[in-house]
Image (cartoon, rainbow, N blue to C red; front, top):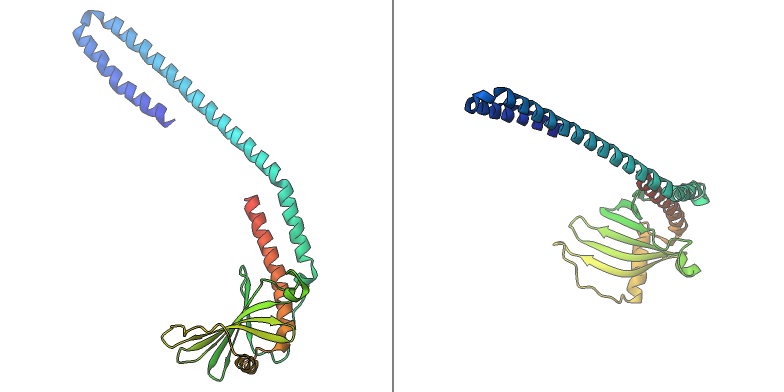
Length: 249
């Protein structure tokens, strides 16, 4: 439509000027020039009309083709959408998803779920220290290559002093024990003290007692296991819903 308007204006401004010039030069042929201009003008209008019709038809055809392609894609995606929705229903009706996890009496930590992430966070203060723990979904009960590995719950624990120093424990919670795998010391300036890969057994046992006093004890394993099983189910359902949203967009 815009092209047609521009061409119409160009013709109306250029052609009259040409006709006036022809009239001045050849006064005796005035009627011939006017007839030629009229015929030329009508011919150009006919071309413009043909162009507009073709353009409109092409646009309509393209729109129709695009709509057909979208319908074909939508139909092709139907089995995927049905499968995803079926799995969402199965996950949300599972025992882990519907289970109500009760916090044990005297559990000293504040619990924070992190939707969309693979962690649950615990935090508390103890005699001026900040105790924090991060539990990870990987290898929660029900996964792994054997029954023992399937019961592992990886967790990181930090004990921070007000002067900026902290201890960082890389641990694995298993039934009846919190295993300390690695230990890091963060100094006041934020630097990490030299890492010692092998912790003497008596030091390891002493640190296990150290953590128990601060609330990280073997007796909380069952509760942590229930939390992570429910977390896994919730994250699975959320992931499926995001997949469904993407496919249907």
